Image (tube, rainbow over all chains, first blue to last red; front, side, top):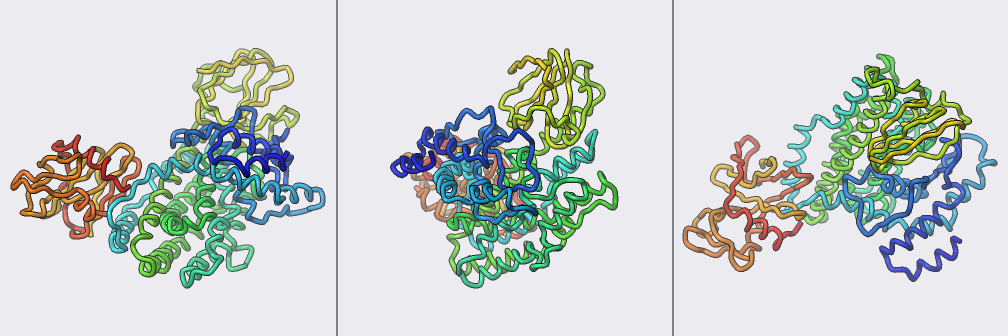
Length: 460
Length: 119
């Protein structure tokens, strides 16, 4: 099947939605990308379900608007994109490659690499057009104007969006469950931290390259594994009883979390976007320092003063340097060398990073608040769950259909048996006969009905 | 240099003797041009649009000012999700800008930005 599709696409016109769907079906049809009958496979970073039962195919005629980034189409497109981008990275299981050897060979196979490259440009247009359209840059920029703009941003930056998210966790009815949801969403990016940007440290572009490399070696802990940033984040996960293997929780990632991760792969993979990347990394290094202080405070508020926060504390310290290094040693010399014309891309990257960050924050906040609503004790009895448990306590014999995004408000009315609504790793709400639950548009969910469960579905 | 942030709908900036007009068109972003006529400093924002948006006619001496000329000297401007930020090079950080909404030329300004947009 792969070969015949590849033969066809050589002649294909770009933007052909039907062809894209065919390619997606062929790509996602590989055994490593098929839906699983379980939420995860331990210690196997190659198994990544891409589609779900609600996916009826892409219509890429119109790119996703910013308010469609929490849709099921966005979830599928972003899952596929990350699987394509991360083929550039090396993943190995922690133990026992033998039984995963076929998965390993398949993930890095020529067929999937080729097919992935064919579908990537159209999916990138589908996913990232809106952020490009939302940012408009005009006027003749100079480095002095950019430095003035940056200083104004830095001096006034308080990470209000991130603080709002942290407050939604600390003030939740179940702060620990909310915090776990948060950590799992971070894991997709932080466990492969700096891999996307490392693409910009190879090649030969003079002293700028070495300056970028200095940032990356900090991220990699100078070759000392225990202080590599991803290792620090593994410790955060382990401290909360979570699995530190990359993408164990793949099926629980929100589309907006994939989107944030994919954006940096998008602008780093294609070096046409190098200057856009310079702007975006300046914004991230500047903002993340402040956000990490808030994350440390959140972790301590939820899990106590002894909470594992080295990952966040490290960034509070080192990102002060990274922000300065990127501005003084990368951006200023780059403009001096290549002229003001690169500033439009640098400013664009700086602005887009803010938009992408807010999309991540808003998507996650909505998911956390929805999941937390099931801990409310003041709902009518027909809407109050019989119990709320973490996913790990769910009867593992229940049928697993994979997660999806709710595209419309939907009510599930239970007639008999038990209906377990999964909102993520940390919150599973169980409803019984005579009860009903509303799943709003824009949240990730799945449900695991008991064998004797019957229910009706009403779309609002 | 001074960075000025506009609230929704604001389109006119005055910093000391300098006056600027922010042109905005649906989906096109913003451009910030001088509102002072290069002839004798007349108020271009009170003038008239001519030749399909290629000229502004100053109300003082009827001088026709080319829009592309004004755009060449536009200010660095960013517009993202309704937030507009402008860098005014010939102003100091502690200058107090007067920012407001001027209805004058509003429809024509949208047309200008649409025709001449460079975003």
